[in-house]
Image 1 (cartoon, rainbow, N blue to C red):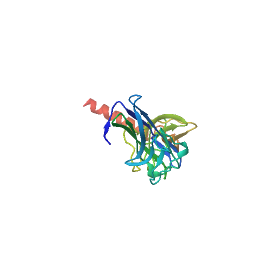
Image 2 (image 1 turned 45 degrees about the vertical axis):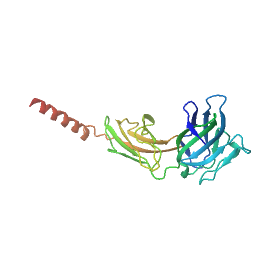
Image 3 (image 1 turned 60 degrees about the vertical axis):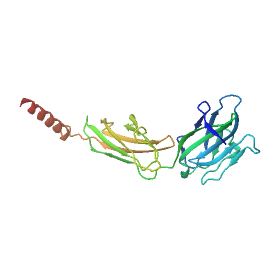
Length: 245
């Protein structure tokens, strides 16, 4: 048949950015005809380029499911505008496209796509280290938090003594990918103590699906006139010396 892409007819898809492994997921296709004369021929769903679901109003039954590895359609909960996938697995991380077609008298189609990531629990340890584990009062803490490999860019939240210091997301800097990689966040804030202890905690959140965290307890160094102040004093006197020259 003759097919023309038509800007006035539109398709919008609602596909979650990420879904937990083993869960069900609902994919929504909001298709809009141009006029009342448009007659819907069918709605088709594709994983990458492979069709797995078709809804044709004029056929009995209107629903047709195509076998694709890893895809289990919940037919009872699926319809013209929604398709529900059960027990999603890692192999369903992919780009999903919905395509709607109308007769007008020629065939017109519109389609839209979105990527979906299947998230598994992170395997491996969260790494949390600090440069100095016995800081003095007023010292700046330098901490590093490194995730186990993840396909989703996480959000890091840092807590000092139970109080949230700041949150940082690498979403904008590094796109999600099919290859798991480690993500890193840095902490640079002045230390504060509660009963001569400082508790530094890094919390990693993967799209509000999985959360892992790690803490370090730091002991206050009471040698207040120690290296930290000497170091500062030397830097200051060094600068002063150069100015005199």
